[in-house]
Image 1 (cartoon, helix red, strand yellow):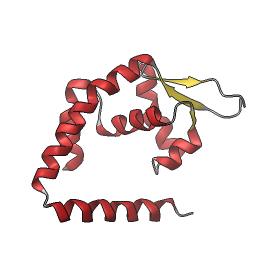
Image 2 (tube, rainbow, N blue to C red):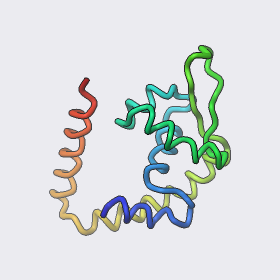
Image 3 (tube, rainbow, N blue to C red):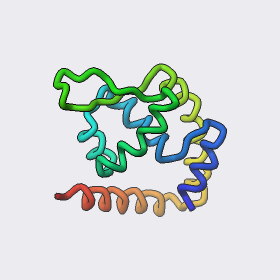
Image 4 (cartoon, one colour):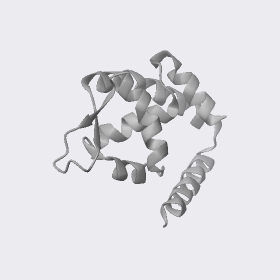
Length: 124
């Protein structure tokens, strides 16, 4: 349900919530290697590559020049930065609507639980 709400918020931007998360991650860590990005997003590399493909086709993300040619790194393009800037207010609106439904303690409890789940998923 939550994913559907965020996807609806981004429909005018032409992206899905998973793609928004990728754009945010790339904005925070420009020219990041695929393996590091996958770990940060708690996603396997194959799934991440599959999710990056449509963003690359749209010219929102590009493979960036890494010093080590064996390492694939990615970065937002200027077009990707523009789309992220347009989509961020949509995310904020969706986030505010969801948080209005949750009691303050429930929202914090949900955040704690999600941090625990992410930490458990990152354990090798």
